[in-house]
Length: 280
Image (cartoon, rainbow, N blue to C red; front, side):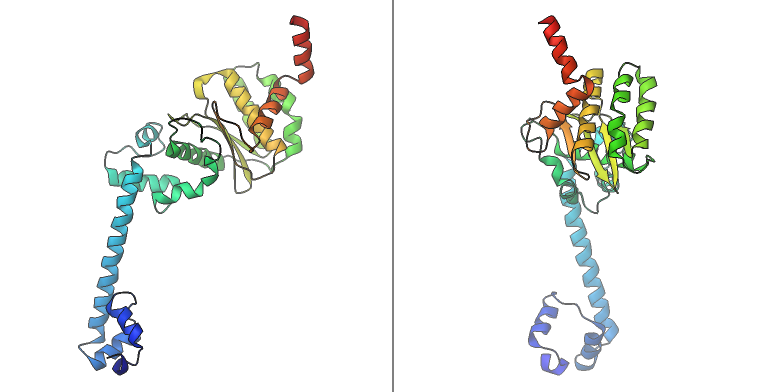
């Protein structure tokens, strides 16, 4: 048959076993050698490929339905990040849209760097972390900012420090405006359970995004996290990805350094020593 069709036996075997498609050229040859029409063979090929695609799609959906169990969908819908629904398949498609992926299995690889710093935190929700980061990314991309200016950002540290004495209704619009002038999109993202995130710096489309979770709703945590993330933006290289977790174990990513810098941004080392000497 291969000789009559003027193709190799291997190629014919691949067609028979569904490993190679019936092309227009092959369909015409089959029409001449076996019959019936070339259209008959092309219809067989089309039906085969459609069924194959449906099976593959169902297999991917089954995998996504398993992944869905790890995504805090209910909490995300309460925040208005995704549409509220009890239909699991609809939830899968909503999550695909939220994360901007074709399959939910693609979410983790896109944020693989996010999992370098929280190995010691118990019961952390990986997909909760990913959802929080994605929301921060989406919010940050919608904020209009100037070109990133590290020098200007550092020069504003005394101004930021003065704002710590004001009420949130007064200081937040101001620090958001000042950050935008330095090329930083400042966003607040509601805290998701079992993520333990206090803040993060994310780079997207050459834009620096500084996201805060306001976990615990405490002023000291808010401001320390803000200055901690500023330290990353000012002292570490552009396009580095950092997440600040509560009670995290420190590592090579510069968290200890950022903590020290944040402390000095808020209270200079000289002022702190004078205070200690005075009341020791």
